[in-house]
Amino acid sequence: MVESITGEYRLTVLYDDDKKADEHAAEILKTLNLLRQFILGVSIHSSNGFEVTFLLPADQRENFPSLFQQLEKSTDQLGINTFGVSVTTMEEVFLR
Image (tube, rainbow, N blue to C red; front, top):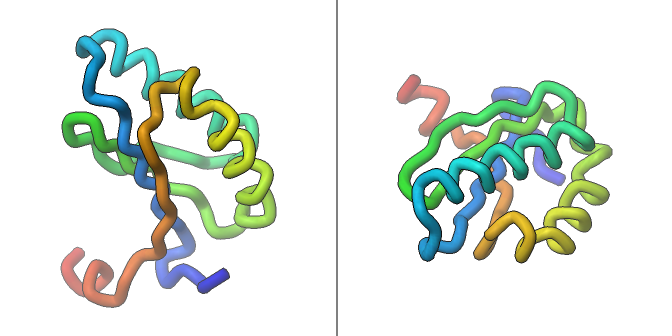
């Protein structure tokens, strides 16, 4: 896995867009609770409509495979359409 420059990875989750605002908020909370079962120090970086980005500390990456397996199993329950992981780029570092 590529080493993150900032010591964190971004998990971007795209939720199904057929939910009401309160249902969507509940799905985000359920997702955050699931992430916390696997990753210490996870936090929400941004939320824009039905796309939410969580920050995953790089020192927890040994737990990523188990987390991703559980996310795959839980997509219907959590209302997740798709998800992906990225690392912080040099451009993002300089834009801060």
